[in-house]
Image 1 (tube, rainbow over the protein chains, first blue to last red):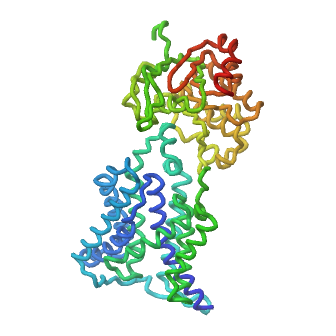
Image 2 (image 1 turned 90 degrees about the vertical axis):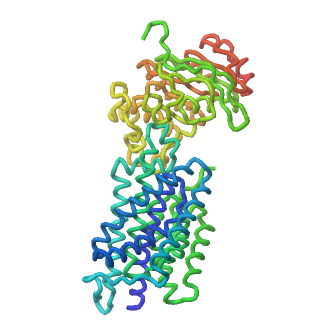
Image 3 (image 1 turned 30 degrees about the horizontal axis):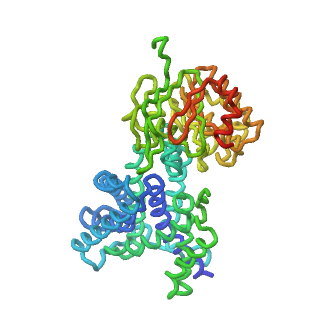
Length: 289
Length: 238
Protein backbone atom coordinates (compact mmCIF):
# COMPACT_ATOMS: atom_id res chain seq x y z
CA UNK A 1 0.00 0.00 0.00
CA UNK A 2 2.77 2.36 0.94
CA UNK A 3 4.59 1.52 -2.27
CA UNK A 4 1.43 2.10 -4.28
CA UNK A 5 1.00 5.57 -2.81
CA UNK A 6 4.58 6.38 -3.63
CA UNK A 7 4.13 5.29 -7.23
CA UNK A 8 0.96 7.34 -7.42
CA UNK A 9 2.75 10.43 -6.20
CA UNK A 10 5.62 9.79 -8.58
CA UNK A 11 3.09 9.49 -11.39
CA UNK A 12 1.32 12.68 -10.43
CA UNK A 13 4.61 14.58 -10.28
CA UNK A 14 5.65 13.32 -13.73
CA UNK A 15 2.09 14.02 -14.88
CA UNK A 16 2.57 17.60 -13.75
CA UNK A 17 5.45 18.02 -16.25
CA UNK A 18 3.34 16.51 -19.00
CA UNK A 19 0.25 18.54 -18.13
CA UNK A 20 2.08 21.88 -18.14
CA UNK A 21 3.94 21.18 -21.35
CA UNK A 22 0.85 19.74 -23.07
CA UNK A 23 -1.12 22.81 -22.06
CA UNK A 24 1.45 24.92 -23.92
CA UNK A 25 1.30 22.61 -26.92
CA UNK A 26 -2.52 22.79 -26.93
CA UNK A 27 -2.82 26.60 -26.90
CA UNK A 28 -0.16 26.92 -29.61
CA UNK A 29 -1.93 24.37 -31.78
CA UNK A 30 -5.29 25.98 -31.12
CA UNK A 31 -4.43 29.54 -32.00
CA UNK A 32 -1.68 29.05 -34.62
CA UNK A 33 -2.55 25.63 -36.00
CA UNK A 34 1.11 24.72 -35.47
CA UNK A 35 2.12 21.34 -34.09
CA UNK A 36 5.22 22.47 -32.25
CA UNK A 37 7.69 19.62 -32.45
CA UNK A 38 10.33 21.71 -30.64
CA UNK A 39 8.29 21.57 -27.43
CA UNK A 40 10.50 18.81 -26.05
CA UNK A 41 13.63 20.80 -26.85
CA UNK A 42 12.14 23.83 -25.07
CA UNK A 43 11.44 21.66 -22.03
CA UNK A 44 15.09 20.55 -22.19
CA UNK A 45 16.23 24.19 -22.49
CA UNK A 46 14.20 25.05 -19.39
CA UNK A 47 16.01 22.35 -17.39
CA UNK A 48 19.44 23.20 -18.86
CA UNK A 49 18.90 26.90 -18.20
CA UNK A 50 18.09 26.17 -14.53
CA UNK A 51 21.31 24.20 -14.15
CA UNK A 52 23.44 26.75 -15.98
CA UNK A 53 21.98 29.71 -14.09
CA UNK A 54 22.66 27.94 -10.80
CA UNK A 55 26.20 27.12 -11.84
CA UNK A 56 27.16 30.53 -13.25
CA UNK A 57 25.07 33.05 -11.31
CA UNK A 58 24.17 30.97 -8.29
CA UNK A 59 20.50 31.46 -9.14
CA UNK A 60 18.44 29.26 -6.81
CA UNK A 61 15.67 26.90 -7.91
CA UNK A 62 13.06 29.37 -6.71
CA UNK A 63 14.48 32.14 -8.86
CA UNK A 64 14.78 29.77 -11.80
CA UNK A 65 11.09 28.96 -11.40
CA UNK A 66 10.41 32.64 -12.01
CA UNK A 67 13.17 33.66 -14.43
CA UNK A 68 13.40 30.68 -16.79
CA UNK A 69 9.76 30.72 -17.97
CA UNK A 70 10.16 34.43 -18.74
CA UNK A 71 13.35 33.75 -20.71
CA UNK A 72 11.60 30.94 -22.57
CA UNK A 73 8.66 33.25 -23.31
CA UNK A 74 11.11 35.68 -24.92
CA UNK A 75 12.72 32.77 -26.78
CA UNK A 76 9.28 31.71 -28.04
CA UNK A 77 8.43 35.24 -29.16
CA UNK A 78 11.70 35.44 -31.12
CA UNK A 79 11.14 32.01 -32.65
CA UNK A 80 7.64 32.99 -33.77
CA UNK A 81 8.64 36.42 -35.12
CA UNK A 82 11.83 35.26 -36.87
CA UNK A 83 10.77 31.86 -38.20
CA UNK A 84 7.32 30.40 -37.51
CA UNK A 85 5.26 33.37 -38.74
CA UNK A 86 6.59 33.07 -42.30
CA UNK A 87 5.16 29.58 -42.70
CA UNK A 88 1.76 30.15 -41.05
CA UNK A 89 0.03 30.68 -44.39
CA UNK A 90 1.35 27.41 -45.81
CA UNK A 91 0.47 23.80 -45.15
CA UNK A 92 0.88 23.05 -41.38
CA UNK A 93 3.43 20.41 -42.37
CA UNK A 94 5.98 23.17 -43.08
CA UNK A 95 5.94 24.41 -39.51
CA UNK A 96 6.08 20.84 -38.25
CA UNK A 97 9.28 20.38 -40.27
CA UNK A 98 10.62 23.77 -39.17
CA UNK A 99 10.11 23.02 -35.48
CA UNK A 100 11.60 19.57 -35.97
CA UNK A 101 14.65 21.26 -37.48
CA UNK A 102 14.81 23.74 -34.59
CA UNK A 103 14.80 20.75 -32.23
CA UNK A 104 17.85 19.21 -33.92
CA UNK A 105 19.71 22.52 -33.81
CA UNK A 106 18.92 23.19 -30.15
CA UNK A 107 19.84 19.66 -29.07
CA UNK A 108 23.16 19.77 -30.91
CA UNK A 109 24.01 23.24 -29.63
CA UNK A 110 23.46 22.08 -26.06
CA UNK A 111 25.50 18.92 -26.68
CA UNK A 112 28.34 20.96 -28.13
CA UNK A 113 28.44 23.36 -25.21
CA UNK A 114 27.64 21.11 -22.26
CA UNK A 115 28.44 17.63 -23.50
CA UNK A 116 26.30 14.56 -23.21
CA UNK A 117 26.96 13.44 -19.65
CA UNK A 118 24.25 15.45 -17.94
CA UNK A 119 24.34 18.49 -15.72
CA UNK A 120 24.08 18.20 -11.93
CA UNK A 121 21.14 19.74 -10.14
CA UNK A 122 20.37 19.24 -6.48
CA UNK A 123 16.92 19.09 -4.97
CA UNK A 124 16.28 22.61 -3.70
CA UNK A 125 16.95 23.08 0.04
CA UNK A 126 13.76 22.76 1.99
CA UNK A 127 12.24 20.40 -0.56
CA UNK A 128 14.86 17.65 -0.30
CA UNK A 129 13.22 15.97 2.65
CA UNK A 130 10.39 13.53 3.00
CA UNK A 131 6.99 13.87 4.56
CA UNK A 132 5.41 11.09 6.51
CA UNK A 133 1.71 10.67 6.08
CA UNK A 134 0.52 7.93 8.41
CA UNK A 135 2.87 5.07 7.68
CA UNK A 136 3.85 6.33 4.23
CA UNK A 137 6.95 8.36 3.60
CA UNK A 138 6.71 10.59 0.51
CA UNK A 139 9.21 12.77 -1.32
CA UNK A 140 8.51 16.38 -0.41
CA UNK A 141 9.65 17.53 -3.83
CA UNK A 142 7.17 15.27 -5.61
CA UNK A 143 4.39 16.60 -3.42
CA UNK A 144 5.51 20.11 -4.28
CA UNK A 145 5.67 19.47 -8.03
CA UNK A 146 2.21 17.93 -8.06
CA UNK A 147 0.63 20.79 -6.13
CA UNK A 148 2.51 23.43 -8.09
CA UNK A 149 1.52 21.94 -11.46
CA UNK A 150 -2.12 21.73 -10.40
CA UNK A 151 -1.95 25.34 -9.22
CA UNK A 152 -0.50 26.56 -12.53
CA UNK A 153 -3.08 24.57 -14.49
CA UNK A 154 -5.88 26.12 -12.42
CA UNK A 155 -4.39 29.58 -12.96
CA UNK A 156 -4.19 29.04 -16.73
CA UNK A 157 -7.72 27.65 -16.69
CA UNK A 158 -8.94 30.77 -14.85
CA UNK A 159 -7.08 32.98 -17.32
CA UNK A 160 -8.77 31.20 -20.21
CA UNK A 161 -12.28 31.11 -18.78
CA UNK A 162 -12.54 34.29 -16.71
CA UNK A 163 -10.83 36.93 -18.83
CA UNK A 164 -11.61 38.56 -22.14
CA UNK A 165 -8.21 37.55 -23.51
CA UNK A 166 -9.01 33.96 -22.56
CA UNK A 167 -12.35 34.18 -24.32
CA UNK A 168 -10.64 35.43 -27.48
CA UNK A 169 -8.06 32.63 -27.28
CA UNK A 170 -10.80 30.01 -26.84
CA UNK A 171 -12.82 31.43 -29.74
CA UNK A 172 -9.78 31.63 -32.00
CA UNK A 173 -8.76 28.13 -31.00
CA UNK A 174 -12.14 26.91 -32.16
CA UNK A 175 -12.33 28.90 -35.40
CA UNK A 176 -9.80 31.62 -36.20
CA UNK A 177 -11.40 32.70 -39.49
CA UNK A 178 -14.82 33.19 -37.94
CA UNK A 179 -13.28 35.19 -35.09
CA UNK A 180 -11.68 37.51 -37.64
CA UNK A 181 -15.03 38.01 -39.34
CA UNK A 182 -16.42 39.04 -35.94
CA UNK A 183 -13.89 41.82 -35.52
CA UNK A 184 -11.21 39.98 -33.53
CA UNK A 185 -7.65 40.73 -34.56
CA UNK A 186 -6.49 37.14 -34.15
CA UNK A 187 -3.01 37.96 -35.48
CA UNK A 188 -2.32 40.15 -32.46
CA UNK A 189 -2.59 37.12 -30.15
CA UNK A 190 -0.48 34.76 -32.20
CA UNK A 191 2.93 35.88 -30.91
CA UNK A 192 2.06 36.14 -27.20
CA UNK A 193 0.28 32.79 -27.29
CA UNK A 194 3.28 31.11 -28.89
CA UNK A 195 5.60 32.68 -26.30
CA UNK A 196 3.23 31.62 -23.52
CA UNK A 197 3.19 28.02 -24.75
CA UNK A 198 6.98 27.90 -24.93
CA UNK A 199 7.15 29.49 -21.46
CA UNK A 200 5.04 26.63 -20.10
CA UNK A 201 7.38 24.08 -21.69
CA UNK A 202 10.28 25.90 -20.03
CA UNK A 203 8.50 25.90 -16.67
CA UNK A 204 7.97 22.18 -17.02
CA UNK A 205 11.71 21.85 -17.64
CA UNK A 206 12.58 23.80 -14.48
CA UNK A 207 10.37 21.51 -12.41
CA UNK A 208 12.00 18.46 -14.00
CA UNK A 209 15.56 19.70 -13.39
CA UNK A 210 16.01 18.38 -9.82
CA UNK A 211 14.16 15.19 -10.65
CA UNK A 212 15.44 13.99 -14.01
CA UNK A 213 18.84 13.69 -15.67
CA UNK A 214 19.54 16.99 -17.42
CA UNK A 215 20.88 16.10 -20.84
CA UNK A 216 20.51 17.49 -24.32
CA UNK A 217 18.40 14.46 -25.23
CA UNK A 218 15.97 14.62 -22.32
CA UNK A 219 13.36 16.30 -24.54
CA UNK A 220 13.33 13.77 -27.36
CA UNK A 221 11.54 11.05 -25.43
CA UNK A 222 9.47 13.67 -23.61
CA UNK A 223 8.03 15.14 -26.80
CA UNK A 224 6.91 11.72 -28.05
CA UNK A 225 5.01 11.09 -24.83
CA UNK A 226 3.69 14.66 -25.03
CA UNK A 227 2.12 13.91 -28.40
CA UNK A 228 0.51 10.82 -26.90
CA UNK A 229 -0.85 13.07 -24.12
CA UNK A 230 -2.31 15.52 -26.61
CA UNK A 231 -3.87 12.76 -28.71
CA UNK A 232 -5.39 11.13 -25.61
CA UNK A 233 -6.74 14.45 -24.32
CA UNK A 234 -7.98 15.63 -27.69
CA UNK A 235 -5.98 17.91 -29.98
CA UNK A 236 -6.77 21.52 -29.19
CA UNK A 237 -8.56 20.72 -25.92
CA UNK A 238 -7.13 22.60 -22.95
CA UNK A 239 -8.84 20.51 -20.28
CA UNK A 240 -7.95 17.36 -22.20
CA UNK A 241 -4.24 18.26 -22.17
CA UNK A 242 -4.24 18.64 -18.39
CA UNK A 243 -6.26 15.54 -17.54
CA UNK A 244 -4.40 13.36 -20.04
CA UNK A 245 -1.06 14.74 -18.75
CA UNK A 246 -1.70 13.45 -15.25
CA UNK A 247 -3.25 10.24 -16.57
CA UNK A 248 -0.18 9.44 -18.67
CA UNK A 249 2.10 10.28 -15.73
CA UNK A 250 0.24 7.75 -13.58
CA UNK A 251 0.21 5.04 -16.25
CA UNK A 252 3.94 5.53 -16.74
CA UNK A 253 4.69 5.34 -13.01
CA UNK A 254 2.55 2.22 -12.43
CA UNK A 255 4.08 0.69 -15.52
CA UNK A 256 7.61 1.32 -14.27
CA UNK A 257 6.71 -0.14 -10.90
CA UNK A 258 4.73 -3.23 -11.86
CA UNK A 259 5.74 -3.99 -15.45
CA UNK A 260 9.02 -2.17 -16.09
CA UNK A 261 9.62 -3.64 -19.54
CA UNK A 262 6.18 -2.44 -20.70
CA UNK A 263 6.21 1.00 -19.08
CA UNK A 264 6.56 2.95 -22.31
CA UNK A 265 4.38 0.64 -24.35
CA UNK A 266 1.52 1.05 -21.89
CA UNK A 267 1.19 4.76 -22.70
CA UNK A 268 0.77 4.01 -26.37
CA UNK A 269 -1.61 1.15 -25.70
CA UNK A 270 -3.69 3.66 -23.74
CA UNK A 271 -3.48 6.06 -26.66
CA UNK A 272 -4.57 3.39 -29.13
CA UNK A 273 -7.51 2.41 -26.93
CA UNK A 274 -8.66 6.00 -26.56
CA UNK A 275 -8.39 6.63 -30.28
CA UNK A 276 -10.34 3.44 -30.99
CA UNK A 277 -13.20 4.42 -28.71
CA UNK A 278 -13.12 8.20 -29.18
CA UNK A 279 -11.10 9.19 -32.28
CA UNK A 280 -11.10 12.86 -31.27
CA UNK A 281 -9.64 12.13 -27.83
CA UNK A 282 -11.15 12.20 -24.34
CA UNK A 283 -12.13 15.86 -24.46
CA UNK A 284 -11.85 16.58 -28.19
CA UNK A 285 -14.89 17.84 -30.04
CA UNK A 286 -16.31 15.50 -32.61
CA UNK A 287 -15.61 16.85 -36.06
CA UNK A 288 -18.74 18.12 -37.72
CA UNK A 289 -19.87 15.83 -40.51
CA UNK B 1 -23.91 62.21 -47.69
CA UNK B 2 -25.86 63.44 -50.71
CA UNK B 3 -29.49 62.50 -50.98
CA UNK B 4 -28.98 60.94 -54.39
CA UNK B 5 -26.33 58.36 -53.70
CA UNK B 6 -27.53 56.84 -50.49
CA UNK B 7 -25.51 53.70 -51.02
CA UNK B 8 -24.12 51.76 -48.09
CA UNK B 9 -22.54 48.85 -49.88
CA UNK B 10 -21.38 48.92 -53.45
CA UNK B 11 -19.93 45.88 -55.16
CA UNK B 12 -18.45 46.68 -58.54
CA UNK B 13 -17.15 44.22 -61.10
CA UNK B 14 -16.42 41.53 -58.53
CA UNK B 15 -14.93 38.27 -59.76
CA UNK B 16 -13.79 35.44 -57.52
CA UNK B 17 -11.91 32.20 -58.03
CA UNK B 18 -11.24 28.96 -56.24
CA UNK B 19 -7.92 28.04 -57.77
CA UNK B 20 -8.60 27.88 -61.50
CA UNK B 21 -12.36 27.80 -61.17
CA UNK B 22 -14.11 31.13 -61.52
CA UNK B 23 -17.14 31.26 -59.22
CA UNK B 24 -18.10 34.92 -59.57
CA UNK B 25 -17.92 36.90 -62.81
CA UNK B 26 -18.19 40.67 -62.88
CA UNK B 27 -20.88 40.99 -60.20
CA UNK B 28 -22.13 44.48 -59.41
CA UNK B 29 -24.76 45.36 -56.83
CA UNK B 30 -25.70 48.00 -54.27
CA UNK B 31 -27.43 48.02 -50.90
CA UNK B 32 -28.79 51.23 -49.34
CA UNK B 33 -29.23 51.90 -45.61
CA UNK B 34 -32.44 50.35 -44.32
CA UNK B 35 -32.72 48.22 -47.42
CA UNK B 36 -33.08 44.45 -47.52
CA UNK B 37 -31.62 42.93 -50.67
CA UNK B 38 -31.58 39.22 -51.43
CA UNK B 39 -29.33 37.09 -53.55
CA UNK B 40 -31.34 34.29 -55.05
CA UNK B 41 -29.89 31.40 -56.98
CA UNK B 42 -29.26 27.69 -57.07
CA UNK B 43 -26.67 25.96 -54.94
CA UNK B 44 -23.26 26.70 -56.36
CA UNK B 45 -24.34 29.96 -58.00
CA UNK B 46 -21.73 31.81 -55.96
CA UNK B 47 -23.98 33.41 -53.32
CA UNK B 48 -21.95 32.40 -50.29
CA UNK B 49 -18.69 33.31 -52.04
CA UNK B 50 -20.11 36.76 -52.68
CA UNK B 51 -20.87 37.25 -48.98
CA UNK B 52 -17.43 35.90 -48.04
CA UNK B 53 -15.80 38.29 -50.49
CA UNK B 54 -17.68 41.25 -49.00
CA UNK B 55 -16.56 40.12 -45.53
CA UNK B 56 -12.95 39.80 -46.70
CA UNK B 57 -12.76 36.07 -46.08
CA UNK B 58 -12.24 35.11 -49.70
CA UNK B 59 -8.93 36.31 -51.06
CA UNK B 60 -8.88 35.27 -54.72
CA UNK B 61 -10.93 38.25 -55.88
CA UNK B 62 -10.85 41.11 -58.34
CA UNK B 63 -13.08 44.17 -58.45
CA UNK B 64 -14.05 46.58 -55.72
CA UNK B 65 -16.15 46.49 -52.59
CA UNK B 66 -17.02 49.89 -51.12
CA UNK B 67 -18.68 50.25 -47.72
CA UNK B 68 -19.96 53.68 -46.67
CA UNK B 69 -17.63 55.26 -49.22
CA UNK B 70 -14.57 53.33 -48.05
CA UNK B 71 -12.69 51.09 -50.49
CA UNK B 72 -12.29 47.76 -48.71
CA UNK B 73 -9.82 46.13 -51.09
CA UNK B 74 -6.87 46.28 -48.69
CA UNK B 75 -8.94 45.97 -45.52
CA UNK B 76 -8.71 42.72 -43.51
CA UNK B 77 -11.81 40.86 -42.34
CA UNK B 78 -11.49 41.97 -38.70
CA UNK B 79 -11.24 45.61 -39.76
CA UNK B 80 -14.28 45.20 -42.04
CA UNK B 81 -16.23 43.89 -39.06
CA UNK B 82 -15.05 46.89 -37.05
CA UNK B 83 -16.20 49.16 -39.88
CA UNK B 84 -19.73 47.85 -39.25
CA UNK B 85 -20.26 44.72 -41.34
CA UNK B 86 -21.92 41.87 -39.43
CA UNK B 87 -21.35 38.28 -40.56
CA UNK B 88 -24.00 35.61 -39.96
CA UNK B 89 -22.66 32.48 -41.70
CA UNK B 90 -24.82 29.67 -43.02
CA UNK B 91 -23.70 27.32 -40.22
CA UNK B 92 -24.62 30.12 -37.72
CA UNK B 93 -21.01 30.15 -36.50
CA UNK B 94 -21.77 29.62 -32.82
CA UNK B 95 -18.80 28.74 -30.61
CA UNK B 96 -19.14 25.49 -28.69
CA UNK B 97 -16.39 26.48 -26.29
CA UNK B 98 -18.11 29.76 -25.37
CA UNK B 99 -21.29 30.23 -23.37
CA UNK B 100 -24.30 31.89 -24.97
CA UNK B 101 -23.42 35.16 -23.26
CA UNK B 102 -19.76 34.91 -24.27
CA UNK B 103 -20.86 34.29 -27.86
CA UNK B 104 -22.79 37.56 -27.63
CA UNK B 105 -20.03 39.62 -26.05
CA UNK B 106 -17.05 38.24 -28.00
CA UNK B 107 -17.17 40.76 -30.87
CA UNK B 108 -16.15 44.31 -29.98
CA UNK B 109 -18.83 47.00 -29.97
CA UNK B 110 -17.97 48.89 -33.14
CA UNK B 111 -20.57 51.61 -33.16
CA UNK B 112 -21.96 52.45 -29.70
CA UNK B 113 -24.84 54.45 -31.18
CA UNK B 114 -26.16 51.50 -33.20
CA UNK B 115 -25.18 48.67 -30.88
CA UNK B 116 -27.87 46.79 -29.00
CA UNK B 117 -27.21 46.56 -25.28
CA UNK B 118 -27.14 43.11 -23.72
CA UNK B 119 -30.38 44.06 -21.91
CA UNK B 120 -32.07 44.83 -25.20
CA UNK B 121 -30.87 41.56 -26.73
CA UNK B 122 -32.23 39.62 -23.74
CA UNK B 123 -35.50 41.53 -23.84
CA UNK B 124 -35.94 40.66 -27.53
CA UNK B 125 -34.74 37.08 -27.13
CA UNK B 126 -35.73 35.89 -23.62
CA UNK B 127 -34.56 32.36 -24.44
CA UNK B 128 -30.97 33.62 -24.80
CA UNK B 129 -31.22 35.11 -21.31
CA UNK B 130 -32.58 31.86 -19.91
CA UNK B 131 -29.74 29.88 -21.47
CA UNK B 132 -26.99 32.50 -21.17
CA UNK B 133 -24.69 30.18 -19.20
CA UNK B 134 -25.13 27.21 -21.57
CA UNK B 135 -22.51 26.37 -24.19
CA UNK B 136 -23.57 28.12 -27.40
CA UNK B 137 -24.09 24.94 -29.36
CA UNK B 138 -26.52 23.49 -26.79
CA UNK B 139 -29.18 25.76 -28.27
CA UNK B 140 -31.66 24.58 -30.91
CA UNK B 141 -31.07 25.51 -34.55
CA UNK B 142 -33.55 28.39 -34.37
CA UNK B 143 -32.07 29.69 -31.14
CA UNK B 144 -28.59 29.53 -32.63
CA UNK B 145 -29.82 31.58 -35.58
CA UNK B 146 -31.25 34.18 -33.18
CA UNK B 147 -27.94 34.18 -31.29
CA UNK B 148 -25.92 34.66 -34.48
CA UNK B 149 -28.08 37.64 -35.47
CA UNK B 150 -28.19 39.11 -31.96
CA UNK B 151 -24.40 38.85 -31.79
CA UNK B 152 -23.81 41.20 -34.74
CA UNK B 153 -26.61 43.54 -33.60
CA UNK B 154 -24.86 43.86 -30.23
CA UNK B 155 -21.69 44.77 -32.16
CA UNK B 156 -23.58 47.61 -33.75
CA UNK B 157 -23.20 46.33 -37.32
CA UNK B 158 -24.93 48.58 -39.86
CA UNK B 159 -24.85 46.01 -42.65
CA UNK B 160 -25.82 42.40 -41.98
CA UNK B 161 -24.68 39.61 -44.26
CA UNK B 162 -27.21 36.84 -43.64
CA UNK B 163 -26.47 33.49 -45.25
CA UNK B 164 -29.66 31.40 -45.49
CA UNK B 165 -31.10 32.28 -42.07
CA UNK B 166 -34.30 30.30 -42.71
CA UNK B 167 -32.56 27.07 -43.70
CA UNK B 168 -33.77 24.02 -41.80
CA UNK B 169 -35.98 25.96 -39.40
CA UNK B 170 -39.63 25.49 -38.47
CA UNK B 171 -42.11 27.92 -40.12
CA UNK B 172 -42.85 29.68 -36.84
CA UNK B 173 -39.13 30.39 -36.30
CA UNK B 174 -38.75 31.57 -39.91
CA UNK B 175 -41.62 33.96 -39.25
CA UNK B 176 -39.86 35.26 -36.15
CA UNK B 177 -36.66 35.83 -38.16
CA UNK B 178 -38.72 37.74 -40.71
CA UNK B 179 -40.01 39.98 -37.90
CA UNK B 180 -36.49 40.67 -36.70
CA UNK B 181 -35.31 41.55 -40.18
CA UNK B 182 -38.20 44.00 -40.63
CA UNK B 183 -37.44 45.51 -37.25
CA UNK B 184 -33.73 46.08 -37.89
CA UNK B 185 -34.53 47.38 -41.36
CA UNK B 186 -36.79 50.00 -39.77
CA UNK B 187 -33.85 51.15 -37.64
CA UNK B 188 -31.79 51.84 -40.79
CA UNK B 189 -29.66 48.70 -40.78
CA UNK B 190 -29.08 47.24 -44.24
CA UNK B 191 -29.28 43.52 -44.96
CA UNK B 192 -27.75 41.49 -47.75
CA UNK B 193 -29.56 38.19 -47.58
CA UNK B 194 -28.77 34.92 -49.29
CA UNK B 195 -31.99 32.96 -49.52
CA UNK B 196 -33.39 29.94 -51.35
CA UNK B 197 -36.78 30.25 -49.70
CA UNK B 198 -38.44 32.50 -52.29
CA UNK B 199 -41.67 32.90 -50.31
CA UNK B 200 -39.74 34.04 -47.25
CA UNK B 201 -37.52 36.36 -49.29
CA UNK B 202 -40.53 38.14 -50.76
CA UNK B 203 -41.90 38.91 -47.27
CA UNK B 204 -38.81 40.79 -46.11
CA UNK B 205 -36.91 42.12 -49.13
CA UNK B 206 -37.07 45.33 -51.14
CA UNK B 207 -35.06 44.09 -54.09
CA UNK B 208 -33.60 40.87 -55.42
CA UNK B 209 -30.60 39.87 -57.49
CA UNK B 210 -30.79 36.60 -59.37
CA UNK B 211 -27.46 34.84 -59.50
CA UNK B 212 -26.64 32.07 -61.97
CA UNK B 213 -23.22 30.57 -62.62
CA UNK B 214 -21.53 33.43 -60.83
CA UNK B 215 -23.29 36.21 -62.74
CA UNK B 216 -26.13 38.55 -61.88
CA UNK B 217 -28.70 37.58 -64.51
CA UNK B 218 -31.58 39.73 -63.29
CA UNK B 219 -32.28 42.48 -60.81
CA UNK B 220 -35.92 42.72 -59.68
CA UNK B 221 -37.95 44.85 -57.29
CA UNK B 222 -40.08 42.92 -54.85
CA UNK B 223 -43.34 43.49 -56.71
CA UNK B 224 -42.03 41.96 -59.93
CA UNK B 225 -40.40 39.25 -57.89
CA UNK B 226 -43.72 38.30 -56.27
CA UNK B 227 -45.60 38.28 -59.56
CA UNK B 228 -43.05 35.87 -61.01
CA UNK B 229 -42.67 33.57 -58.04
CA UNK B 230 -43.77 30.43 -59.86
CA UNK B 231 -41.39 31.04 -62.72
CA UNK B 232 -38.55 31.75 -60.29
CA UNK B 233 -39.23 28.58 -58.33
CA UNK B 234 -39.00 26.61 -61.53
CA UNK B 235 -35.83 28.41 -62.45
CA UNK B 236 -34.30 27.62 -59.09
CA UNK B 237 -35.41 24.01 -59.43
CA UNK B 238 -37.03 24.06 -56.01
